[in-house]
Length: 350
Image (tube, rainbow, N blue to C red; front, side, top):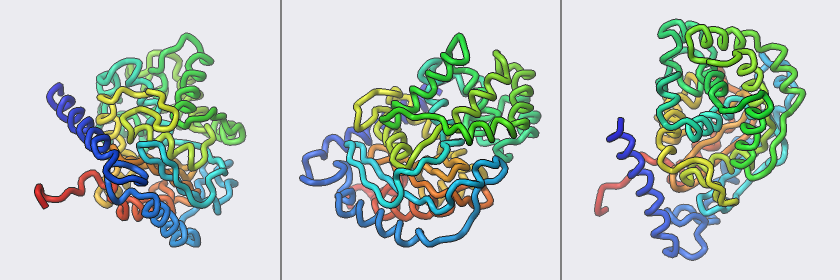
């Protein structure tokens, strides 16, 4: 574990060092690491993807939470933020949707910062479960040990691990942390929260089961309610891209300069995103793009090209796996155009 952690941390640090070293190589470049990341190339890639997919009518809004079915399905916006803090956008970047499962990444980061890199692997695990995101069978298989922070059982447990003596202290800490990632003060969409709280009986059962197996130490219903509230935070495409770019920039918000995650902890967070970020289609996504990513049933997707950029897109209609149809396609195209895949390398000397 120690060797692996050191190896990946050094690799990630090296990528960022390469970015910094070439900072002055191309005046006017949007991001220093890659000649593809010029202002023109980025704007062209965003516009091309937006124009290509804005008329796409595939998918449907999530409806198992009643309020989500009422969200405007025409919302479509894309934002890319480079690690040197430049922001590029196209489409609707003002309309807010609920962050939903994308929130899991940032609560995971908070617990990692508070309790260390080994806290979550020891309590809930980091493996993909091979089951649906809200599976009870997956909990029973290994008595809650083989979860990860991006499925509901692991996510509710992760929320329960945030330090605090009261509901309000824990909640204010989570919301403040999300706001620091976004670079502005975020708030809860109360209609979404009320709708979700009224229909979260399965998550309550999951929390009680994780409590019974000793993974949740406090009140499982409090953990469930805070988790429900965190999923109801309102975000727009720019907020999500800022949050993604902070992870791409080794845990430092590239616009505000605020340090939020230790750089040496970023590789593990991205690894969990890579293996479990897009529900049952995480493997398909990684195979196609190579990008650590996380989706939410509110219609948002964030993706990270380490040392280069964070990108986000919002479009509420989802595919059968629960991932935004237009957001997936747009991000994949943009990343391919701009060389975002971290696995895509050239032979040495060529």
